[in-house]
Picture (tube, rainbow, N blue to C red):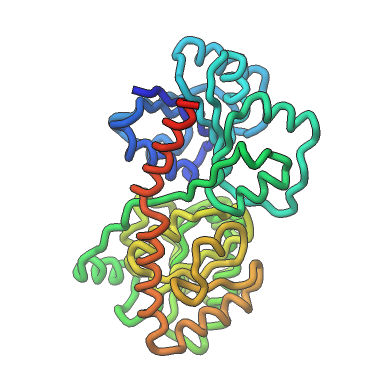
Amino acid sequence: MLRITHVISDANVGGAGIQLAYLTEALRDTFDFEIIVPQGSALLSRLPKEGVRITPFSFSPESGLSFRDIRAFARYFRRTKPQIVHTHAALSARVGALVAGIGPRLSTRHCAKKGVTALGSGQRALYNACTTLTVATAKAAERDLIAEGIPRERIRTLLNGTPPTRCLSQAQQAALRQLLGLRATDIVLGCCARLEHVKGQDLLLRAAAMLKPRYPSLHVLLVGDGGQRSALQALTARLGLLRSVHFTGYVDDPAPYQNLFTVNVNPSRGTETSCLATSECMSLGTPTVASDFGGNPDMIEDGLSGRLFRTDDPTALASTLDELLSVPGRLPSMRDGARRVYREKFTLAGMANAYKQLYFSIIEH
């Protein structure tokens, strides 16, 4: 069985870690997977409990180079001898694999950036030496890599996929609504993401304040936690939305809350490629209103499975949501479109099959 070691530098639970958990769980009977994470990483709680070796390792969660980490990874790879090393922002691990003579060496670009510039000659030389191939999780990430000067032939674009989100029974949904103080007729604008500036939850709150006079039953459900929680709670108070905005905090399983969304909102102003929360909501038939940043335009068929709005513009977000909510029949038609796009492009089975083909083909060549 092909031995593949993934190294991920995340100290927290984010989309990259969840995607890696989905992937290794789906292919654990096909490949001998090991996942290396920083010691004490919160991601440990989300990784597979069976069939995948999980190794906490003493290395910096930062993505830059550390000579101490390079030496440690080189010693470890010489001992464990993986056939492929696949890193997620952990550059030192990839260089360590090169030093240890391990190859192929893969990396994944999980984010899209603003203002991408070409790499310097030294950075390109390092990339060419230590990276066999880079996986881009969206066309936006692929464009960034090309703009940085990464050769196109060293890039493969493989979209993220998710298992279908489970549907709650009507009784279960009613119980959760009661817990949150929601009625069955309330409009729920949901957002599942870390509470950080790049995720743009402040834009959703400002848009909700604009919409509230027209839609008194409108509520916002923010699923997740992060460094901006206090600032967002303060903004909620200033906007007069304390009774209409609900903070769940971090949850291992967002599915129950996603079942309550009237519209999934992805207001990201940075990093977004193929967002897992968007595909999870698509599987339920929930339309998404998303910023036109990064990979969002590749996920949303504007007007068919959801809508796009101008990034960083809360007025545009409010206007787009108003168009959806004010026209009878528009949301039901988009629910069918969301399910179709999920089935065609964003299933876990589709992602797993693409990676299976990639791993075997790269070893053969």
